[in-house]
Each structure stands twice: as structure tokens, then as C-alpha cells.
Amino acid sequence: MVNMVETTSAWNTTGLHVHRKSLLHMSFYWGHKSEILFSGWPGSNSGMYALALMFVFALAVTVEWLSYCSIIKPGANKVAAGFFQTAMHTVRAGLSYMVMLAVMSFNGGVFLSAVFGHAVGFLVFGSRAFRKSGGSEKKPDLPPRK
Image 1 (cartoon, rainbow, N blue to C red):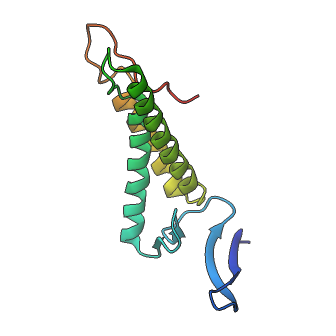
Image 2 (image 1 turned 45 degrees about the vertical axis):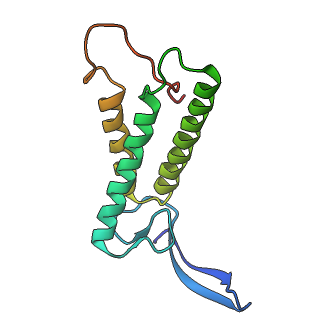
Image 3 (image 1 turned 30 degrees about the vertical axis):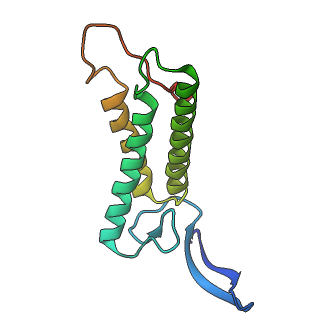
């Protein structure tokens, strides 16, 4: 038994009721025929699926970078720094939700791409593996997610 919604109903712009095929899965599945984030993307094209996996991976790495980057200089105007910090938090939250929505496609490759993206992002930007030793440790502009 396949746990997938095969058809959806909708009203088109002329007011006619139409049925169309959907790739909405209700449990994890493996395969390149999927819809991730946008209707019809990547579809059934293997190359576009690979691009979608790289896109989700890059989104997850970017979320980790935003979690640990330190752009605001000490002594900066507190009000301007506060607005900048708020803008960075908003972008990070939006990108995090995009990663979450991609994972909600229930595609196993997308899930692994997101997990590995977060892992690589943390390894590079959050762990001690690539930090310069010595000196005072610089704190990120945004507190890490809880």
C-alpha cells in the first residue's frame, strides 16, 4: 500500500472544478520524483532533483552560519545594532522554515540533505574544529537556536 495522496481537487480561475495529480506523500519515501518547496519543482527530472538537494543543503548551511556569525562590531550604535540583529534573526527564521518545509516533502534524500547541511554548517561555523586558537572568543550576534 502506498501512502500517498494521488489526486487533489481545486477550482481553476474560470470556476471549473478540476482534478490534478499530486506528489504529496504522507510518510518517508525514496526517489527523485517529488515536489519540494514549489509546485512542480523538481518534478521527475533527476538533474533538478540533485539541484534541489544541493539547494536544501546550502539553506541548512546558511542557517548555521547565521546562527554563529559575528558581524556587529563592538562599540556600534546600540539601536542600529539591534535593528540589524533583528533583521538577521528574521532571515535566519525564514530560512529555517524553508528547510523545515522542504523536509515536510517526506523525501528521504531531502531529509538527509538538510541534516548533513546542518551538520556541516555546525562543524565549520559552530564547533571548535575550525576556530583560531588563542585570544578572546568572539560571541555570535544571534544566540544559538534552542
